[in-house]
Image (cartoon, rainbow over all chains, first blue to last red; front, side, top):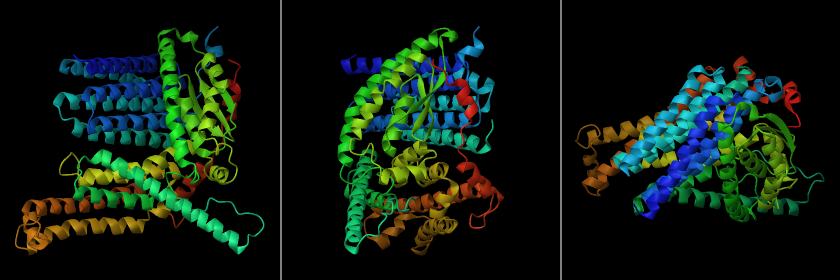
Length: 104
Length: 88
Length: 377
């Protein structure tokens, strides 16, 4: 295993770790807004890391640039989607979970 | 490297399960939408890893690019719908 | 899509000479924006294509000219002619710091995920901003959303309403370091009061989604055209490319409203495109019949094109792909319009359309939620 592959494996494993935190967050967090914190951004960074790792493994060619292109697309699209769906929930009057009400 | 990719894709498939739980149980409709969006993001990476396993990367990259666009479109459409309905 | 004149009327009527200078200034700006979008789109095409012969590159030039003509005002609405390249350079310099912030704070979120729920303290934070430029606001909003712990919920009257998961991340945001950095990126424009702020008034509702969709649309359309043009090497072809093109129009309708989109992509246009797509497909097939082959027997086209059998076959397939792509795009768009308007055309305003317009204009914040939850952390 050469050094590029080692870096790629490191990136992909980190990406999977962040995917995992996102998945656990979506399971554990108490309300809609905090679940958005877990999915909206851990997933963005995770996709970025995974795709960069795969591009490093693939080496310098056109397909690697396309992989980075998808990463850039997700990097801009995911926060926008998160914002728009949070705003929709907010305008529909979804109540956020607060510490005061739920802890003695 | 192939077995590593296989392991990664299996791990990501396992991570879909908690999101699926939220999509089925989720108290509100908008929770389900978010869970489905999260599943879509994982699917995007799984598709590319499958491309590496089958050694047809160029083809699977094109597919997952379309998947990314449609995932974004779906989230926006759901948000727009809820905003116009005014309730969940 | 966006041809309304964004320049505000100056109060005293200007003399003819100043009119001419304004006009030529705007003309130069438009030409420069057209050129810049063409260059960007063409680079994108080259990145996608992977086939660098005269034939494919000339298709690419044609597609890029088409898209940059139809959407030259999409990419650079919020910036003037002189400082576009400066902003792009400074933006590239901003990204590493931003990435570093994202990684640091994702680890923080990971720690939060594994700690007990009682450690969370979600609350809303109002954050009045000093930025006025649309693009700067959108960059800032998306940066806030990407730095874990904070999500931009609402942007209204130059105030961000941010949902923070923890008091620590809220304090990090309120130091204003990120805002200062973004202000530096958009230096000459960050507080511009003239063109950009009127733009903002017209688009204040849903600014973030509108700006991002506006930037994505030309690239998605180029991608759709690439899928159509490379149908015989890669997955896809006319049908899939047409669907991607239609998706870009649906995206526009999502962000800018059905009415505004249908005033540009009219029912008439979709009908014409739909039937001409079928005409191209059927015409090529029938041409082969006339030349003595079977239906869609491309090799017979060589009698007509004189380029050799394989070339003729390739050109024939390309023609059919284009026909199918145009027809599918127009068909999908018109199906979407029919479903979304419930079959009623917008020139006869009906209940459904009016309801749509009213609900999109209604941007009241449910104040009670805000008051309930804005706490000091």
